[in-house]
Length: 111
Length: 114
Image (cartoon, rainbow over all chains, first blue to last red; front, side, top):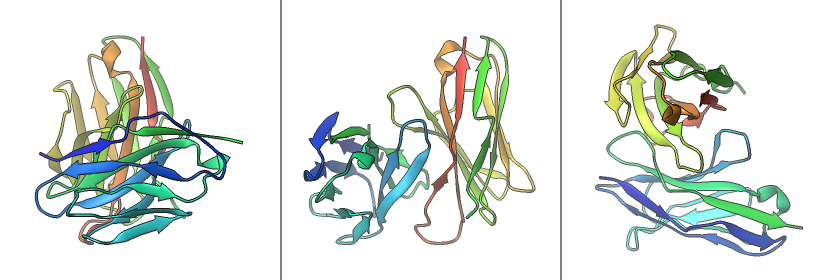
């Protein structure tokens, strides 16, 4: 079946630091890949997505590239802000349309 | 823009009681997914509906049932509640028929079973 393995947290960074959150996946066929963000007490918001190999998703300074050869979809941001503090989930959809999530990474950005 | 609406936002129940959670999709979205997120856990898929028919089933207990109505809203019915059912319940909706269409999540219903 499908599975997503996500970098364990929590991650604590200073403002303006570089962020990488690793995500690898196992899936049959050609999954679509997603990063969702969950702010405290809120629902899940789509951050970015990529639907085929070598696609790069980007939004709000965050980027992730769909790497089929390494089955990875690592999230990066060049300069984090305090407002980026949240839980980040890597997820995929495959032949089954429901999302399979990773375990989530708690990011805290300190001023 | 209109978003996914879930009600109630918070719910407190006793063990063995029943609960009904509601989800109202974004207009023109015809597919609904239900997910359960336990404390500190990732969301787990429960069940999904497309055009009022169940389309897939995940780790949904037999004590739970769900349906989608003619206006595309969905209800998750939970009976014989257990302490372990305490969680955040999300629905997500999607416009079927569009390749790789995104699922949009509601704010969730936080259920506490005492």
